[in-house]
Length: 528
Image 1 (cartoon, rainbow, N blue to C red):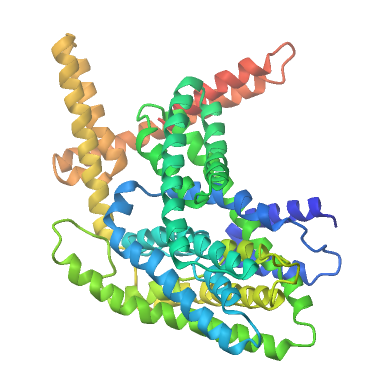
Image 2 (cartoon, rainbow, N blue to C red):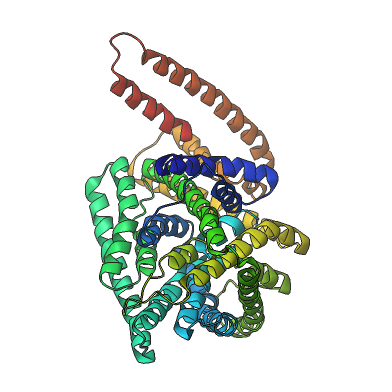
């Protein structure tokens, strides 16, 4: 098997792991990591040969962009305090604790190299958090905080990592310079993200065609990441800024086709890239086995100690941080999404899995220092990092569903249903208001006006059938049945039309492009 065949195997595994994971109750990223580990020990599978400097820019931009599409700027603004405590403060504290312990237990490990180890394993993985936690039916506030933590902590960790690597390579360190680098990295990233977001928004208006617009959304995250890195900014923060800008300002409520196609496109990209990323984590087991030859006991002991530090520090930090956030939250006039019980805090603690970013940063540790000597204890750093990633991702990922069920942490289904019903009522009322505006300008027959009024109410009914409980419930029971019946008959009629048009595609003299265009119109009509 060559490298290209291995890539196709990972892509196939990414697709198959979703239904298999659902049946087995195992999150797909964890299943792909296990699959990659199995491939790593197979004799016929080659060692992965990907330049480390290409892993982050190749995998992170689409994954981050896909994650941001599921959230909004309002959620980040509402959670700025807990996200800061997790994404900045906890990353720094974890880095310091890991560096201290690693410096003490690994013989001859310089403190700068230990800090680099702490920085690269400090941030929980945003992809693991959103992929695993998002499938468990957790309260939305917890998912929002985990997403925010995972998306923003890489910014802090990567800057600290580069500072530590520079100190280890050159032998010099300046706290003032490190702080300045962090600030400048953030400023440059936000500026690049806003400029590219604005430019991409204007360019998508110029393109017009949904296919071209969706293609643009694939290019923009990469452009944002690469440009920010070239200007010594944070590529991760630049992608987040660009994605949030586009989500806020590039959404056209009437552009139905682009929205539907874009949603499907990014679901596919997210599934494939996530599967490949976690498959690569499993494949790194091959290198870990080679590194630990003859020193298994010693190196596993180091990795276990660091895993203990990472897990314990997160718990000891979350308990007072959550308490402090609650105290400050009580003084605020707006709703802030925070854990409301010790059970939710425990779930947040156990959801701190490491993943793609940590693997990429570990592999990117230089081979040599400025004076030409080997980078101190590079093999040990990579092995410990891999041990932490596997332990947190596989062990915590496999047990997190059980923990969530055991603690009974679930989304507030009644609240979500009520919010859905409120949106349905608002949608129906907006349609009615527009109908009244039209009636003031155009003279509509009474029969047509009544029909359109019923259609306005049906808009809300189709979104939330419970909406009928608030007005004209008894009359709507029969109406809903009729709507469903009409919808069923209409779907069957459209199905017959699609089959007829599709059959014409193979007829002599038929133009496939015209057939596909007509079929596309029928498909869009079926979604209405």
